[in-house]
Image (cartoon, rainbow, N blue to C red):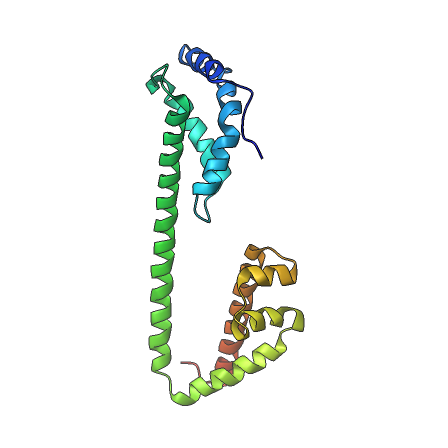
Length: 197
């Protein structure tokens, strides 16, 4: 697929000068010239989880707002892609911070739960396993297969998605719901037996 545009550099330079002189509409020329190559570049450069369309849009907004800083006659494409690189780096850093926070939060929850369970008598662990078996049996076969695929057969999420005709995101959500359902089922059974502190 070609990302070439029929808009040449001279037309871009003319449009940029017009925008710098106070006109707005000529910036459309810049967008039409660079939107496809910019999105293609971002799609290759961006790590998973980054919304390429959002970063492209931010890049054009930032370029428009900083257009007075652009030195006419220099390489506009290089200037625009430098802005895109900065926007991508900023977004990647933001997502990494969110992921780090969630990872630390989840690790703290996991540690707390492990400490709590270490204080339980060994027979409670056996009861939990028995309840897990019962709770698994209570799931319908059409959803229990997700647990089997992921935890018994260690099948990757993308393969599970293909097998089930769903997206990877939908499979992740399904697994999360099933784990939550199993957790709640086990805890309610433990409480019913009076073994939960």
